[in-house]
Amino acid sequence: MSDNVETSVIALIAEAAETEPGKVSRETELSELEIDSLALTEIVMEIEDQHDIEIDLNTAEAWETLKSVGDLVDMVKKLIADQH
Image (tube, rainbow, N blue to C red; front, top):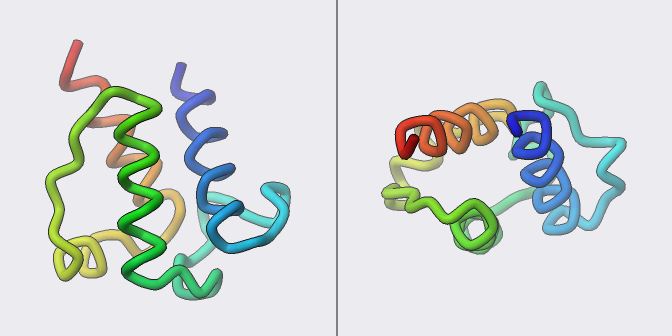
């Protein structure tokens, strides 16, 4: 399951950044991809729908805690694990 989470999050981020998923890794900084707060909000909403979780972050907190793709993937994995 966790590989699917990582793959789906990377795919969503790549789509929002209008780049190929193969060019996005856990180490990729969101700022490098020019992911702004609106795009991040849309990504988070899509992740919530796909994985049936609720991500409780305001945008300011999100920018403080989510710097890389891996940060977002890890947060989603933790929220999914907490539900089980």
